[in-house]
Length: 122
Image: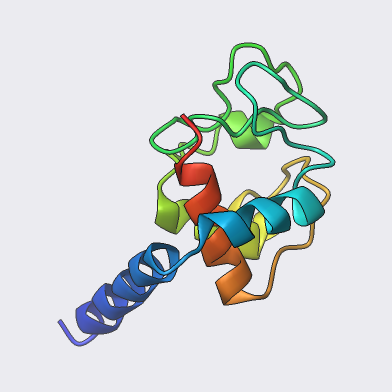
């Protein structure tokens, strides 16, 4: 029980972080940090899959994208705001052996903004 409360607080902080995101700023951060490899347009993959509809999607399942690593396909991740936050903070920690060549976005507000942006992509 001693360890449960910190985990609950940490999960709550992650949820609040994306709730406080600004999708307009997130679009700019997405363009700068993610746009070279990921698209915000349905059906348009780049070096990585489109991020349209990512919320609630199982990792490694965009049918039009053939470049997933075995590690991503086997990760068992279902993308939630909290999981997206963890992943864009430290991709190599969340999916060891993944192909994403990005070290992570250290700025919590920047991540919250990107998450707010990608959550609106349907």
